[in-house]
Structures are given as structure tokens and as C-alpha cells.
Length: 296
Image 1: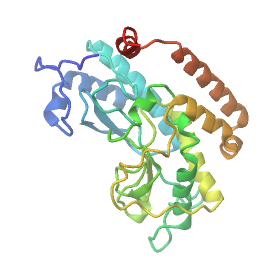
Image 2: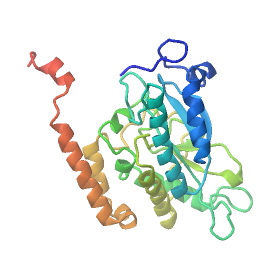
Image 3: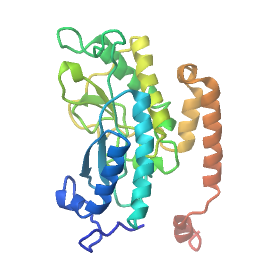
């Protein structure tokens, strides 16, 4: 896999975070994509270049979880089709290139009172509510056993490795991007929690259902979170499953997640992923041939 070539005739380079020129090099593609997004009212707000080669970040306007999952699903289709029209292809693998950073689908969440529309994460005086801290605690407790829904493929775990700008922990902190759970700076009305665990390869419906389930369980059980992380959490690498097989086992054993998500769904999903892992395990990789075939 090689990065695409833009109007300049030069192959796309990485390490161009926020570069306007890097985005402009693909203006014909992005202008057509923008037209599709507007026609289908997908609510795309911003597009910027990220650190990886050919890696772009898209931000969606906030909204109802189910409606937003619809928009994400349709956006992926629009991106793939538009790319093919321009002689390139788009991938939503979590880690498509070995020496480039992986791609995520960060989910920002707040909960509104059905009657008043008020953000329940904030008290009347503007301070953080007990439900806010319960939600964080729910993510801390249940993200590890629900990781399969945020990292659903073998490749997903290539992204979830240390020092790769991806979470390997369930610490939380205020505007701390080294934590798996980040609290962005905001006013009381917009107080929210960012789950940084999901990869861009997720099913958006399942990922949103799973993260809301984790937070709900924390609020329902009045759980208390740890203290917020005030420095880097990059050194913490042991709190999440390290591979697909481990993630399957953890989800299957978590009864509270099964009760909310549906025990039949959890069992069916785990069985599908077990088959996927078994199929993957039969593949002999190029690394094995290079390092083992004539040396052991």
C-alpha cells in the first residue's frame, strides 16, 4: 500500500497535521465529497489533515446517537465511492500502514433529560453532577470487557499499541489526550465525555450502543471514578485486551453488558468473531516465513 498522489504529482507524505496545502492537493476529490455530504445532509463540519500519510480527520455535528450512526455509515459509503471516481481508494482499517498512525472514531457523549433537554452531566449551578462522574466510572469499568465492540477485527489491535497516539488505558483526564477517556474543555451546557477507544473500523451502531451501555451502567450503579490523570498516561498499557481472542473472552464473561445489550446478541457476535480469529490464525504471515523458515 502506498499513499495517493495529489495534483502536485508528488506522493502524499505523512506528518502534515492541520496542513491546508496537504488537503488542497486533493481538492477535486474533497469538493465532490462535500457536495455528496451536503446533498445527503450528513452534517460534516470540518475536515483536516492528520499525522499519517493520506490520513484525514472528519468531524460530525452532534446529534441523536442512532441518527448520527446513520450519518457515519452513509459517509463511509460516500467516501469510498468518491475515491474510486478519482482513481484512489479509501480505507477504514484501524491500522492500514505499518509505519503510520492508526485511525480512530472518537465518540463524544452527553446525556440530555428527556423532559427538559438539560444536560444531566451538569448541575444547576454549572458544576459537574454525580451522573457525570458515574458515567466516567462506567466507562472505566466496562470499556475493557466491551473492547470487542470498539476493536472488532484482528487489525484493530495493531492500532491499540503504546506510544502510537492511541489509548491503551481507561484513565480519564481533563483535555488529556493520553487517556482513553478525555473530558474536553466546555461550558456546563456542553459538558461531555470523549471515548477515544473505538477505531475507525467499528460498526457505528454497535460502538455507540456499547459506549452508552458502559456509561449507563456506571450511572445506574452510582459508580465512582478514579482521580483524573493530571500527567501523561502513555506508560499504562495493561488495562485493555491485547488481541481479538482476549477481547472475545472478556465480553462473553461480562454479565452486566450481556443483560443490557442482549445475551443472545453477545453470544452470536462472539461466535462470529471466534470464527474470524480461527480463519486468521490459519494464515502463515510473511514475517514467519522471513524469520523462521530457514532459521529454526
